Length: 288
Image (cartoon, rainbow, N blue to C red; front, top):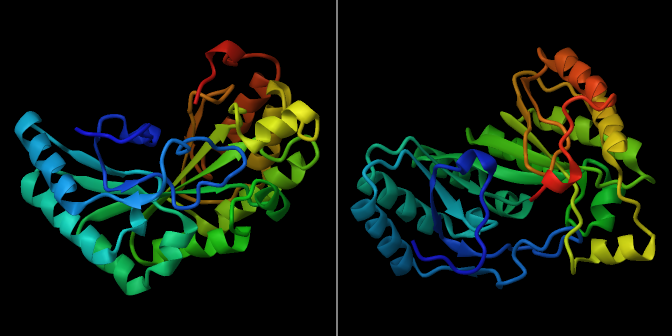
């Protein structure tokens, strides 16, 4: 495969065929993120996309999953995406699902009919970043949306029949807003009730606005105990029946896996054990 710049994918797409259909992120201004700073957002030429999929067919015997990169593949025109989906399922009849990252903007600018059409043509799930349910945190981090707008985008995706995987970032509220971040993020998940909930833990990347704030002292990064206290408060307020919950990213201090709401008490118990030091990942082992 031919890739432009750094390529990112969700943990669950580790064994997927990854093909860039867009380059970069359509927003690319979040204060904590440097993922797509090496490129400008652009649509990849359709002929190159076709060539990559044809190359993959010649190389790989079985392609069960496909992930469409980069950071906001849903921003492509619906007609383009339908062509791409037709190409995938035509070349790879064994393919079980196609997924991509989506932003609140790319979900909202598509009509419900367009999203339904994409679902009918084989787009099974979209990954969307909530980051926080607290508007003060979202504003400070320059997310570009309010919590209500992100919730509405998630609800719209679900109404169309798309599966929804939503992520948030532990510690993003700093010491100043950790309680508001925990409670309001839980409430945002409750309102969307996505199929999958993922939590990362904040890591400060060099060169970002956030790194400057930390250096200047205007943002205090939570330590492991503070992150777990935030997580305890989050779990006490989460009410999202059936959501598969994962806190197993390399950035996390503690690994948690379960299904809500049935496993909430077990997850809380694991967090409380973590507060005693049990099962915690050492700082040097954390990564993005």
